[in-house]
Length: 151
Image (tube, rainbow, N blue to C red):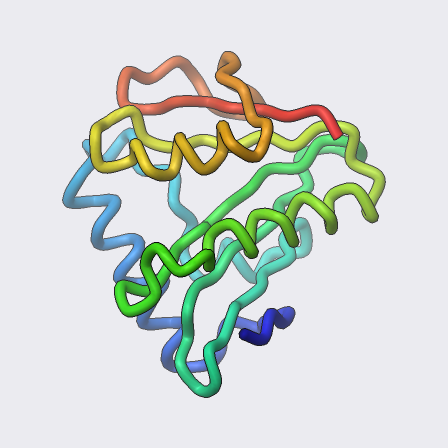
């Protein structure tokens, strides 16, 4: 599989991110959806990557710089066709490595508290993330779990 920096213009990438947003809105109350739209993912504080299996999009993920030494994992999504094939682990490893290269001392994330998000929380825990309080602009929310890892 080929991991590459992405400009969010490929139709498959746009479709996967739209699917991601729609899913988050089906699962969580509107005020608890923290997934970013295409414009936000194209922002100057973001780096976005895709993972391709030949010509098929396998997944995506992003790194947002919150502060000079604090990054946030955003928009991790695996295509349905590639679930449980190591896509999320590979993307997360890349995001962690990129955050280190950019000088981050801490990497954080927000994910859901519902059962649907249990596999994501387990992935992050295996990667060394621990539960923490809200960071950045987040506030306490019963539908969110905040996690962080020192780099």
